[in-house]
Image (cartoon, rainbow, N blue to C red; front, side, top):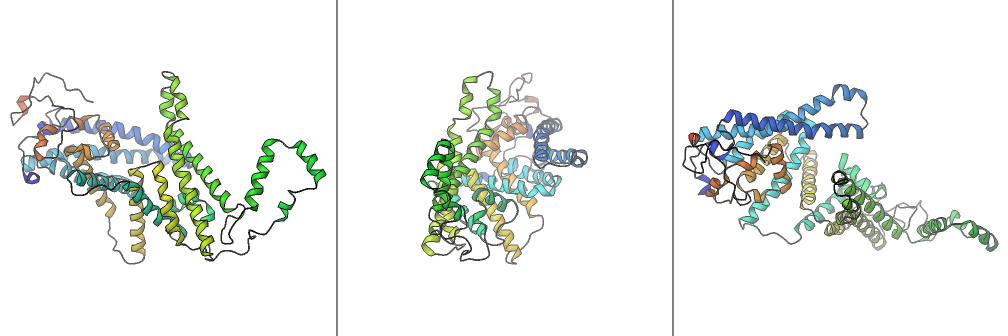
Length: 472
């Protein structure tokens, strides 16, 4: 089988084709990774500190050490990979299909994650596990093992949203960031309360508060007031009147709005948030084109993606709230099980903004949440250092794809690897690796490295050693 066959090439012919020296190649990758890593983490930690309003002591004592620690983690991940790449080749006398990617990245990733702060290991593990799962799925589809489901990312998001909203409605179901995020998106009105059957202390839909009675003054007074009103004031008061006088079930906790306005307001609020988020993401590129291509500046505000993200978030909230209110009207009870149905239907909003990345990430976080709940309940065992092991395995899977089948790796991660290695990851001799049957060179545009024949062991692609190899 191809997986157990070996090619006798040395590491210069396959891996570090820009320099025949293993030591110099490792230094080159490490130096480049160090520069890129610092450029990534320095502004990231600084912005995070500003947003969290850290005190001066943090900037004096902790900011620089935390930046350097995370920088050393990412640098080690890249630099140690090429080190173990060369070590494995010397130990095995060649390359197997698994050794150039998975085998070399596994020990490098495990050592690297140990250098990172413990508080960040879980987040990194979830991200890489999500990426590895997506990569394995693409590999299985390529090999014909599984068939992709049409709109599969939407279905996965529906199931994930259903369970997330169920845990959100339960007492102690969600904690920390997940609970805070859903509270911001959905609103505090859907937070679980003690009585499961509603709260009768709030005014019934048929009740008319005294404040509303004041909206209908006598005819003479109304004529005098109307002359002083402008259009904005009149519209606002009309909306407030409709919100307060419309139908609202006794189990609903949105006391100041009826069920219809409750859903409409939720849509408008989160549509605005999604629109602004997408606009902010495009600000850096817009500034770069401000002077060179000023005609493209309006696209910052009238971009299709801006409205898609807004429609996704807005419809998710409005569908969830609308379904919850409808079920309260139908069953005359406020039940946490309603969240399963409402969350699933709200997941249909992903048709506006399809994203496998979002679906997979949220699903991974859901699995993590359920696993830790199982540990608390004594149903699942606790494995020490599971996060470091899972990170190492997940990263190794992604490196295996990056070496042997780039077409099955998420494009954004491939671009990140190129950035981290200053383009050197694309200089591997993947045409030789095609012998393993994974089409390793399919997306490499026919690239053939320029090798010095004095350092090759197998007659292959060798050119004049004086030719320079240009790094991408």
